[in-house]
Image (cartoon, rainbow, N blue to C red; front, side):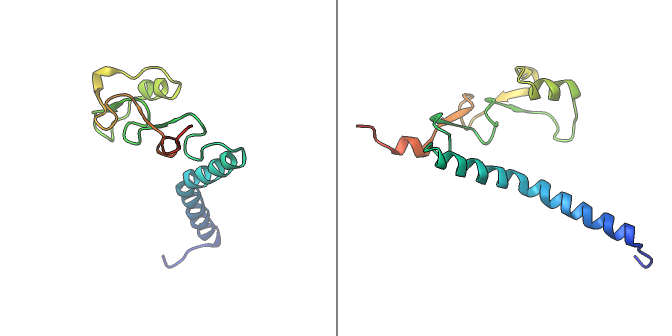
Length: 113
């Protein structure tokens, strides 16, 4: 790294900035959505849906059992557009019993009289 030009240094800076933005984007989005829900008088966690998605299966109820580095373009596209997952490479989620969701812990604490 003896002869680094200004444009290479700027490229490294932009790469670090983009990596940082990519890592923090989900947390910023969660913060903004929680503040909007509280401003509207809704549950901060579920938005008055009374359920939250399972963090293990991400709400699908199924867990892929293939190699984490394998890539299947059509299956990824179908999953993105909401088509049902292929059950051949999936097992039911044990955390949510294949339901894909849990009752919202914040809403279930509130007792309705």
